[in-house]
Length: 632
Image (cartoon, rainbow, N blue to C red):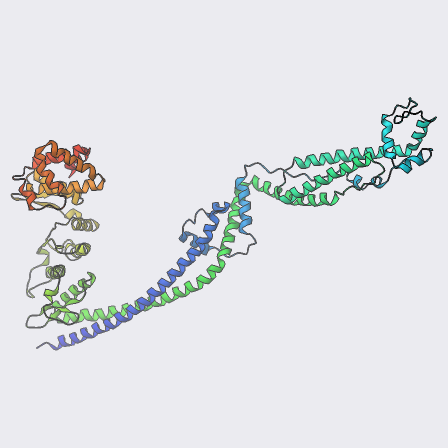
């Protein structure tokens, strides 16, 4: 009959277990809710990063790309933008890009100024003389005839070609009337001549001024199309006015109107003034180029932050909401875990009041959970002597042990072994645990590689630490990964100085040798090590051909020279008959069988190693052979 104290303890234990189950369900729900909020938050943050990064990508193809130095990842960029204060700006990307482009392309030479246009003879364009009809005088008897014929300009022009000393008409050759030339010249009196001289003076002044202005236009480079167009129009006006003045001098009797250049010159000079302000500003920047590029960078980031503002406003509030939700869930989970810890304390006290076997059951089940083994657990089997019993989650008890895989059986046995090492089979035993010698033989046999780390950690926590737990611990293994993992753990715990490594070799007799951790780094080194052991009589020579085949497969596959290996094997087989048996075995690659071994008879390890060396010599890899035989 169980004691009343045990019954009460068992009831308290069961109640605590049920409470923990309830709390587990609630915790799982809260954790799931928190995880959902986190996923949504991360998705929103990623979308925000992508949006900001897309804007950066647009800038990369512009002269402003120099501003992007520093925040060269999505995380760094969003961190910079979030840290910036929003500021209003009138800057535009195109304008900033143009400013930067001008400065970056500049060769440190200031831009030349643009001269304003001035036409000194501009007043001549409005002279009234050009509209007057300059004709002959009426004081000569010839005046009426010349005016009637309307050819005064022709007659005046012809006077330059007549010899007045002759008395014959240059056209009909008849004798001219008396005083003909005197009367003819009276037609063109001093007033007429004076007006012609004025016209010639106006022509000289205007032509000189206009030609100079045209030369200035032709020698200048204008920075925009509008200025180029207007100056071209002005040139045409000036050339046309020169032509009109020439026409007036050739035909003084006609009226001509010169085209005014005033409006064009005013318009052009206004544009030049605007451009000159830009030139002066640019030249001032050029004198302090680095500082102005830095100012452009600062203005660019103000613009960039402003361009991202709408996106930030949309995302930040949602992100904040998710963060708050996660904090609420985190607090809830911490509260649940505190409640679970309180229940575990109740369970621990109850188990101490029952028996130590319950503590062992709890430890083993806890480790089964950590190792990911589900669907079964250990339970207490009541009787005169408390025992363990495997139980499936569906409460099926028939042949539970037979339904386990070899790996599961190995793990359960190993966990039980650890409990035995740290507990007592005999409640009345007086033996001290520190006097025990623990031997663990290949604990990962039949186990997946996934358990190598877990088993090593179990040994570390339950056997190796603290170092005074047991008198001596011996761990045997064939697995190099487990070997290196266990060595690493002892180094991490600073107990490597209390650890000694050995290698057990099997030949005619077993032998034990000291070993350093770097002696065998991986399986490839182990193959070479085995060949050396066979040469030294520490390993059976029967394994030598198989080690050689494995080495050749590993090495020539790694250096991608299997074709060279095949050729070398063929050549050696042809040239050296004693090589053919090894050649056939190696050439079967991974499909070797017992037939291979019977071909060798009594294996001489030294002869085989010499043949093996020839393969490396033939393929040009003798140096690798010598090095591996030295360090293996």
